[in-house]
Image 1 (cartoon, rainbow, N blue to C red):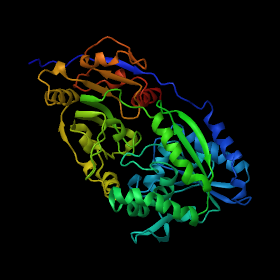
Image 2: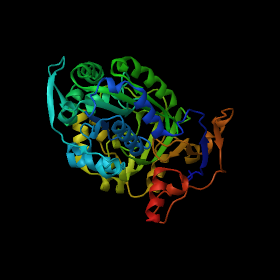
Image 3: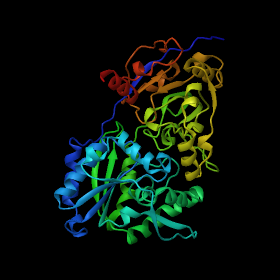
Image 4: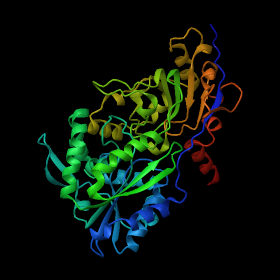
Length: 436
């Protein structure tokens, strides 16, 4: 049996999808064309929601919204709308916003990060409905969020404007109540509580963002409150069609460079890897991955390794770098505990990859259908082993970019991710440090 690691080659996926050329201008245009002036009095305060997801260009988008709202005669402020993220504390949520470039200095307006809520009623399970006090006391709320498939369930409403309203603005207590009964409760309570809040809170407009497979803004849509319940499911279907996916249905070994909440709310997007790992729930039908490894935490996830339980193997350094506090808060609030289980860890990336190959149910390492990706968000470039080569034939959106070559490791046996993925978030992060 060969003990060497198989060579890999780069495959590029080409995507022909819509893309907004000037996103701030599109945001401004959507606000100006809306009927927000019919709902908010001149000079009124407007709460603009910004959450914890890694939305492309969120700093420029939020600033454009703030400037336009002010031009329209309102007094905007930004509200941290991210449920229990950031450890469920004002300081943690403000720090998360700052990592996206959303600060008071950059936005030119106040940022409200209090966790104080008001209780507006109770849901059909008898649980209290919490809502951010500052948003409730404003003259109008603009729900700014990306529409995309949720990482835990499938329904008419997943990750988007209604979720921002019910969970993001519910703060830690509201998020906990919506998640209290697990998936059945989540699927029922999201539309139920959202519909209730639409009638009880001053929602003035929704600004829906759709992203394409390159994580660039594909559409900016103003959604009037009375249309939200009908429009959002259609936008969700559109967003699902725009998502990037792995181009293979059966993978023996999937190696992921980084896990992080800047890539997915679950750290590793189940819609990409095919694994749900939710109590009582089956995995997704594709792709089927025999052995999955993740090597690092992203800097942006601030030690929150939620989603590590989706992997079979990881590195000792990832385990050392995790912060149990935000991970514990996030997991206990969501009531999905399996995803926080820590898998077997090994000293180096080479050890992890070798062990994956030795335990993926193939006799020889060279027989393994292995794919290496930087994270579950950036999927334009993937690296594959030779057994996957034939699956490229006849698929015009897949292009073999290199010959098969040895996997690049440094002197410590760790994968040179920046060389493999020079356009990735990780590579840009290192380049930025070198420029400072």
